[in-house]
Length: 331
Ligand SMILES: Cc1ncc(COP(=O)(O)O)c(C=O)c1O
Image (cartoon, rainbow, N blue to C red; front, side, top):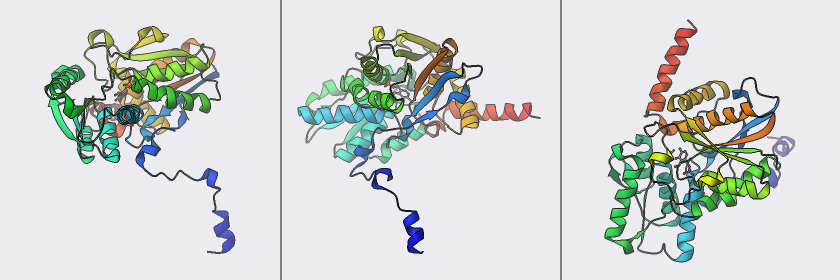
């Protein structure tokens, strides 16, 4: 190759991708992508952006909360040599804790409902973490109760990050997700839309954005009823309410039917080339409802993970049905 051609390809250090010492340094700084094309008949002054949290090294938004909780544990001495990290999780937090435990050098054991996706179980095991199963029929609440029992039987052995009650969960989003959104939109964000699981994402991000501009509207996407297929999200009225959840900090809650969230996932795959998990479909559904009510605004929604995490679940089975119907429609 000539010297001139090699020089053409040189990159300034500022443009080069980061060189990290550890995966821990790669958590956060996820991109916002324009998804306005998913709306129909919206005011031309409305923009929709999705924050693609699947770009975190553990594949989801939960890397942030897990990192903050574990670091805080080390700082306070609650997490140290000889301790095992133990928590209950709907899946993504487990993956994040397993990854961060491996990178920091702490053993991790997770309690999770036995009906979570195969992909999740296997990824957790790939990070060297152990799994204890609770009944899938009892959902995430069953895992919480079983985890409590185990910790109470030998409290000195375990460090329990306790994402539902740990202030470092929303703090992670106050310190990282919120400032990233503010900066990426040049301070123009008008609405934040996110699903509620532990509620850490919406609480921390919403709190930060409201400190920057009290007019920012914080909107939660919540499963429509207790029996739903939106893995990762909670129907608050029928659940153990997380200690970090403060409903008075929300401006609005939008109930989401499972099928609608799934349909948005299928449509986004085809239309945008973005294949996401069902809680992202729920966030888009809620965002479109918000977008239909305003004349102008910059609506930022959180897409917690990508769809490849759900290939063995009902989301994917629905996908096959969807593809079949589409083929029939197009003759
Ligand atoms: C796929 C998915 N979406 C959304 C959420 C909700 O995030 P948060 O717990 O911060 O409310 C979670 C949480 O586990 C999740 O796994």
